[in-house]
Image (cartoon, rainbow, N blue to C red; front, side, top):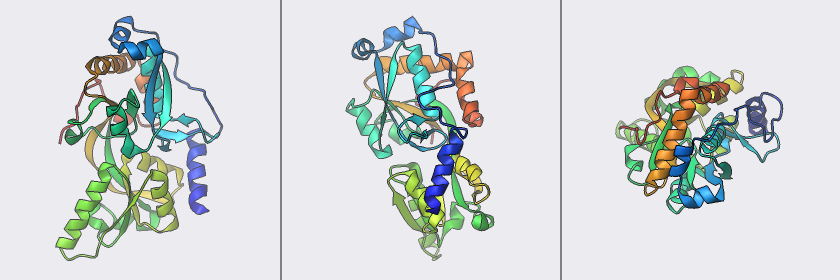
Length: 290
């Protein structure tokens, strides 16, 4: 019950305390005809850009008070991008570890779901980068002083979301702990971040390792119950996923995102969701570096 209460508080706080179902504070964007012409004919004729999104990674994505509508920085961004291209957007909620395959198979035209643009992923998918981010550790307030890095998690049970880079980070740290003969680090993998938060709330996990935006958000909304441990690590961009063969769509989405950066809409969205410190100056393609 404590975990569910904490998650409910997260959702309510993310909406400013009141429901804004199907409402966006982002002004509608004018269509750029040149960029629209780059959109593949099939998408252009349908009038709709289908995008995979998450629903459990606040403030990037979360469910509104109706428990159906996805809100957050990512839905706002992809909706505004689509408007620049003269399209409506259809948001499809999808599991994180299914979105690369979904874009490759063209189940989705694009995906925006807090996925790091990492060099090893660029062989599978093309990224249009939309913000700079990092990874962080979330722990209970009473344990925070003893956690300053992944290295301090030996002997702990650590929650991570399936398919994320943090799964690999924690697995690598577990090997380091074992090699040094230190107490075992147990990795707990959950299908979504809700499971990670619940495990931390109930004491099943001692820490949650995830993206800095959602770790920071959870810490802020917990009113001191949780804190970040140590400093963020590994700075990389999040990117919009596009099929590698759809080069014109990449150009269109990159151009539309740059338009949003130039006209101030991009900054407005990030400020609204309190993640402006991750703002990029330019919309880049495959800008993630090891």
